[in-house]
Amino acid sequence: MAFLVLIIVPMLLGIYAQMKVQSTYSRWSQVGSRSRITGREAAVYVLRKAGINDVEIASTSGHLTDHYDPSRKRLVLSEENYHGTSLAALGVSAHEAGHAIQHATGYSMLRLRMSLVPITQFASQLLPFVLIGGFIFGMLGLIKLGILVYLVLTIFQLVTLPVEFDASKRARAELVATGILAPDEMGGVSKTLDAAALTYVAAFVSSLANLLYLFLLSRR
Image (tube, helix red, strand yellow):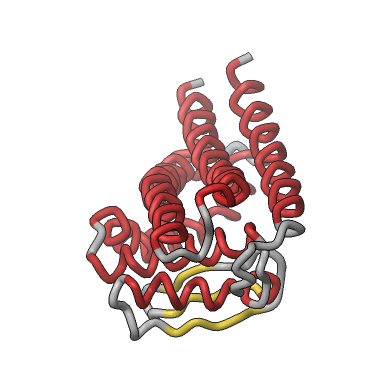
């Protein structure tokens, strides 16, 4: 029974989180801001208010491909958010600017997350071998290796949570402080960012569940 819970619950949570973020973003991307400021402009204003002038802002293809690359000081927005003027576009853009502010101010959890990136990337490369060997062939050695792999991934996902929550908190505050949005427009922004945050919670739960699953499997 425990094995089924560890597989089914995270899977359902992951599906729900993806459906939630897609539906919420779709809804609020149809609601324009009164300022008519684009996502790129919002990111520029937020960064300038924080005294940050050395971050490149670029656009990329794809849906919700927005991210901040601290190694290159590059804030990348999907084209729909780069050019968009919706509440969703401004919320996502300000969120990524929040990450740039974290980087500039030396936010401790972001520094920790960055330090975990190399070992997390290595663990991710081992994951296919762990899944094949551990789940299909039942090779005990690979199950133990899988425990280590998922331990690294779980720690990384755990550290990611405060980083994402803090970036959203900064985004909400800065959008109002800069006058980009009025307080009564923040409902759509908050719902968009909260839905996005749920995907990170789901990723952590999934990684933790896989870690527990492999641990229990190794004890049988």
